[in-house]
Length: 296
Image (spheres, one colour):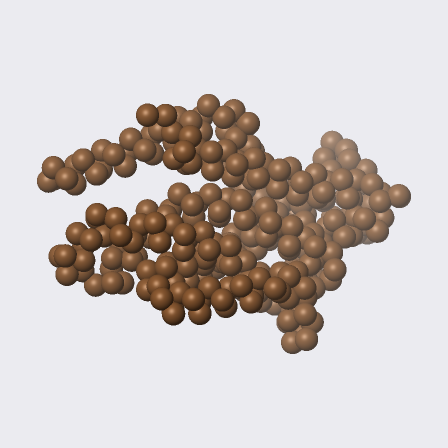
């Protein structure tokens, strides 16, 4: 390994280690990160484990009907006798899946758009960013509702695509600002002098240096997308039956809160706790990666 490469690797490790140390000092962020991981693992493997004990989210027991929380059903059952805990875990899979997929789509579009606009500059940058300004005038929820209603889109795939396709605007602006500050740095000029292609310079040398901003934005955007999905499902244009997400479960529970409050409390607490944990973890991650707070 050459001396410059070794030095760069050591510096990278030092910056990552410094960020990790500062993140660990933020106890609330660490706790919320642990809660987020626990919720994700519970949603992934919880229904499978429950199946070993003969409990699933689809088995209907009309004779049992709706029952309050008990030793047999920790969060009670719904009006069809289905176990609410397992339904909440399965709904969490869909809610988290929508959030993760839509965020991934937004990151791919936003990073590419902002990086290309900043690196090319000139009229290309002007036109691309004016398009972003125009799209900012479309409220995300209204846009998704109108498109799904007009074209009668019921597939969950379209929910992923539409939320992701309108959620990349802020990411594009953030990445554009980062790339503009990096495109004239020494390592970029060195790559140009060596004859590297513009696409290689941009996506191999510049974009990786924006990953701190990208990771923080992705962490903070997950709760927002989850809220979008919940609101859309509440309005009846989100996840469709027989699938159920936290948004649809909250909708079902809110209509029966007087008689059967546990039908609302379970999914409501699960969704609220997850969004709270992701927001606090994202804030802690942002503080840990912020170079302005790094001690010399």
